Length: 242
Ligand SMILES: [Fe+2]
Image (cartoon, rainbow, N blue to C red):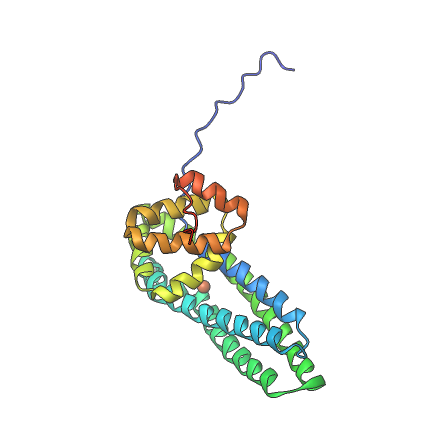
């Protein structure tokens, strides 16, 4: 104990800045990890399991393309407008990801066209390629979450970033949005999930928000679902008795 020591003044933590990357990247990480595990679990002899794993792979590849397009269309022009060339590294990475996605789509077809031992070998190639894709994306997303956010936060208010976010989200077709939410809701922390859904409730027509809640019910575990209902102060609607 040092009686003369004065405790440091408690600093009020700065409110966190609006992070445009964090929620979608959490969804993508979970989606990628799940898909790698799913492909690793099949050997090609259980046809329904294989069909599911390949469909999940193709859905991941498709959402990766959409995600790249959204960043290229909405975030890179903003970064390059502030400081020319600041999105170049990510641009180059995106071009590499597009080529990788094209290769993996062909690999999915090779798996489908083969049988038996040859199919298992093609599955092994797909599994390794997916792993590399995930590794590249982990490095890339970290770059965006640090370097891009730093650049965006230095030059834009949260209100400006929120306007970009809203324009980006409004460009997403409903079916893609539902698929993203399916992976995003269970991947977020409760704090993030509750904040996002509270905001969505304020912005969406009631009927559309009911659809989001229905989706949340399907993908969240019992505890997370109960906590969400408590925070949103929503009464769970019980099935109608017949
Ligand atoms: Fe990106």
